[in-house]
Image 1 (cartoon, rainbow, N blue to C red):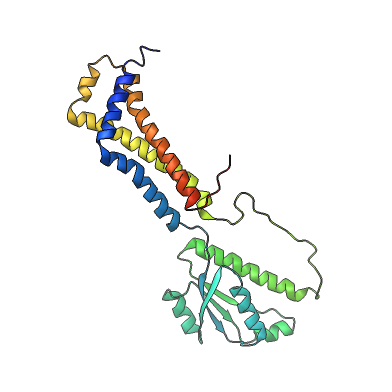
Image 2: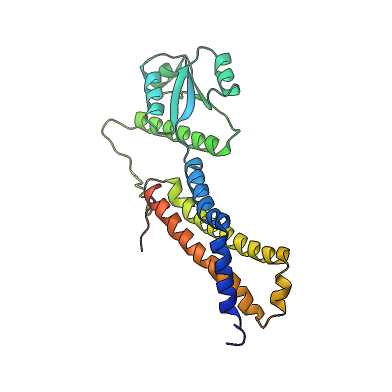
Length: 254
């Protein structure tokens, strides 16, 4: 085993000197992943909230206003304005000023009071599939909840009540989900890139062939090149965990 690792200490010392002298590579290894973590941590958010919504309320009575209030009370929709015609409703969606358009028909209140079926048109911009799916699900849930509320007698509860409870990430925060995986990707990128760069540097300077004719064994050469960057990777790991905990409040247990 000692023969297989021959030259490991010398290559390790030589690579440590290169890292110490090449401050730009060291700064690249320590700063760039932190910048990527911060930028992506603030830029990527998988939670769909506050979808711009316009309302065309032809009914204009209490029942229609209650439905609009139900939309407002969710964190999914944000009513940004009212329109007065089907043309304005379509233009708001096509023009991009709103992602969702809700049309309450003129007979909405009459149908509800007569125990009939009132149809509400919901126009959804499907260019963003995640936003469209969230708007579709929430609008359908609001319609179902409103129907059950009107069908059940006052004070009567549903026969089946589902009470979901989110574990480990109760607030459904995106950084809690993807930042740990992003940390692994950044560490892999830094360690492999710097290790490959050190070997390419030996080739460019013509010293790689000199290493081959020395008593250094291949395993000792490879480990001597890798271990210093594993140390840098560990420092990078500590810095990333610190930023995850302090900047993004990602809980770390264990």
